Length: 116
Image 1: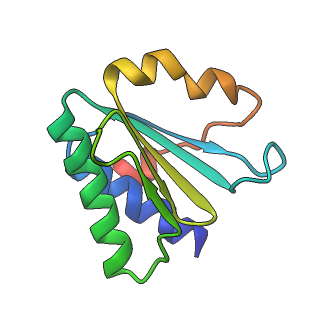
Image 2: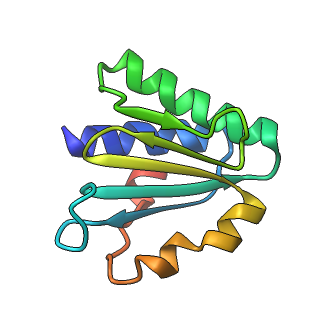
């Protein structure tokens, strides 16, 4: 199920032209989730479009959305799908928070097969 959520949400992000999509394997690094998926948009509208698409795909496929925060501000939208947590940043916020560096111990998931 986790790989299905991962694949579907990454594809949804890509469909809305999310930039620099990165998936971190958090298993063994954090108890929060199995995977963090991080991307950014270049405008408030794009951030909201990406988050809305992820939410829509999750609902269509029957994934439980445990929490969705930050949509109205469109600076950092967090979508908690349980085993997978989605982070959709505005470009400026992504550079500031730098989650990839913060969670530098987590291996990066190869996305070639997902986005290919």
